[in-house]
Image (cartoon, rainbow, N blue to C red; front, side, top):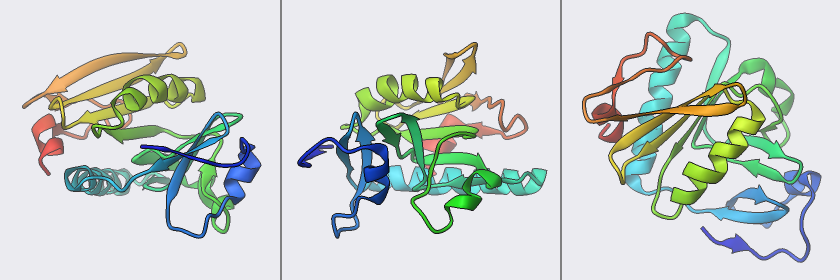
Length: 187
């Protein structure tokens, strides 16, 4: 990922309205635009697999939630992240139908799939930001290290459990969902 040069630091409102005439996607980090490159093929297949799995579970449980890609999460006054997957209550996105879909509250679950250029951001920066934002569950799916780190928010901080191989990932958001790490990493 590279930082895109902008003449000045953007406010959150300027970020929401930013259009450089391309289809590029950006995160906002302390007012600077961070270009988000298209994911590698494995990364994209993991997103596809997990979104379909989450949608099936949401439908089965008849929850008014959406599992989405390309939705932003405002994590600080001049920060906005684009999780690979974000599960949100439908009512949180209803007022975003015709504007930039960046939510400022209510995310239930965030998932990041680690790429070689996102290791520090996914494990360190987003972990702190998602905790401060109050996201109850954060998954770090790491094909590079062949593991899934599940973080549960407890008293404002994440407690982590690392799963590998045939370990079933134990989600509190989807407690009846049975997914093994190998299923996730090689969909």
